[in-house]
Image (cartoon, rainbow, N blue to C red):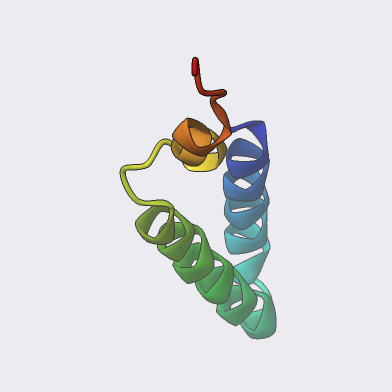
Length: 60
């Protein structure tokens, strides 16, 4: 989660510089799309811990 916050802050900084440099604005736009796509690809499984059932031991 902290990684996502740092990425969002990086995007905001690049957008700030993007007003003065056109190339950085395009980089920031690509980063924003990747950030949003990361949330879409994560799904409802809860991230890394989504497949935890596979690792439970049987009682038998």
